[in-house]
Length: 82
Image (cartoon, rainbow, N blue to C red; front, top):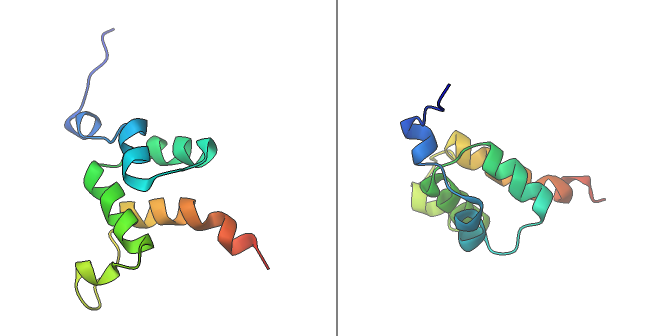
């Protein structure tokens, strides 16, 4: 049976795009992020938030869910440190 590419899959960021946007990301985190099938915009929003540019979303606006999932993956080790 041929695979069907959905619109969401066609717009998902590749591992190379994720690395280009986020910079150095360890392989385990990269795999977890790509598995989410985020768009380039999702990855860019996470990057902006991590860079401290959260005001880009507007005062009081929450981080979009997919970008939040990416941030959670990237900061998971920080939460484990004392």
